[in-house]
Length: 323
Image (spheres, rainbow, N blue to C red):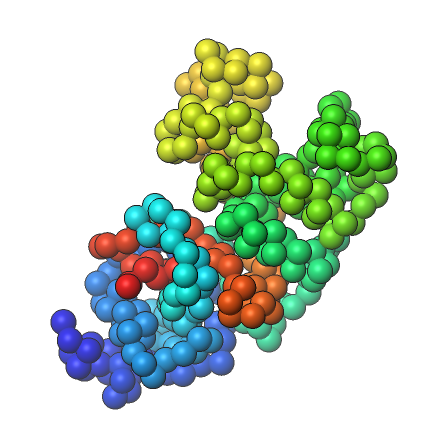
C-alpha cells in the first residue's frame, strides 16, 4: 500500500497524517501492540515522512475512534527481543482508555503536558531526573524500575517492613545497606528522601546490569533473587520453587498466584502490573513525571520508556520499530 493510498484512505489532509495537535489529551494511553492494519499504516506514514520531526503530534479518526500519534526520539530500543543501540525515530500511538481497538500491554492513561502537572506525593522532579539517568546508564526501562518500586514500597521512600526491617524504595535489607556502605540503620535510611535514595538504588543494580534488565520481570529478579538472573530469563522460566531456592519460594508464596509450586519470571512481572493498577492515579502521575524527565534530557541522552519491541506484524506503539 503506497503513501498516496494511505492519504486517500485517511482523508484528513493531503499528507494523510491527520490534524496537527499540541499534545496528547487526558484519557488516552499507550499499548504495546495494536492490531488493525490501517493504524499500522498511519503510523508508518508519519514515521517515514521527512516532513515529520521529533515532538510532532497528530490526531486522526480511525476505526471509529480518535487516535493520537507522537513522533519520538529514542537512543536505544529493542528489536526482536534484542537490545539495539543507536539513534532512532519512533512513533508512539495513543488509544482512548476505553478503546474497542484490539491491543495488548496496556500501560495506563497519559495526560497532556498542560494538565495534571502535580508530582506524586513524596517524589521530586530531581528524583525522576536521577531515576531516568540511572535507567539510561544501566539500560533499564525507568517505568519497569518504578513498577518494581510500586510493588515493593508503593514508590514511597519511607516504606518499612516491620518484621524484616526492609526499607525504602526497593525495600533494602539492613545487611544490603551495610554492604553498600550506608553508615546508618534502617531507621535513618527511611528518613532519606526518594532523591537521596537514588544513589543506593544505582549502587544496588550496578553488578546486575550486565545480565540484561530489559523487562519488569528481569528488574524484579535483581531485587527478589539476583542469583536467578543467570538461569531464568524467559517469562515461563522458574525463579524459585520447592526445588530451586526453596527458602525464597516458601517465604514468597504470594507470587505464585496459580499455586503451581513455583515462582516464574512472569509471576514477578504480573506482580508489578497489579502494583501499578493498585496505585491508580498515583501511577498516572508517575508516568507523566517520567515522561517530563525524559523530555528534559538532550536528544542524545533520551531513554526509551516502553516495552520490548515485537518487530514484524504488530504495530509498535510505545517504540515503533520500523527501520
